[in-house]
Length: 110
Image (cartoon, rainbow, N blue to C red; front, side, top):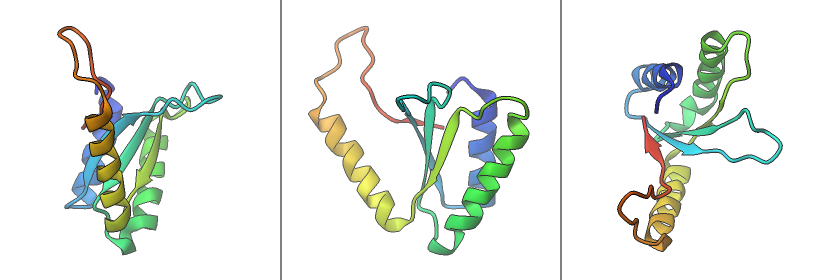
């Protein structure tokens, strides 16, 4: 992850909500070229879902004051975390082996 502001946002979330894990995934949303990343926040306690999302929104507005924020933050509770990790394992298993010099599509950890 080259964007220092996104790394800063990820570190702030992990510091404020211990036990969470951040995984970045390319967004590729049709009609929304400025949103480049999904920031999946895994292992979020059920009671922290709303407050974490509010914290992430406010922090990202501070980090990107006059421009569109290039990330969508998606906090996941225990159930959704399991589903997300299962999907990632399936995608990795289904993707062809990477050849030397090519990059295999996968989630990027902060």
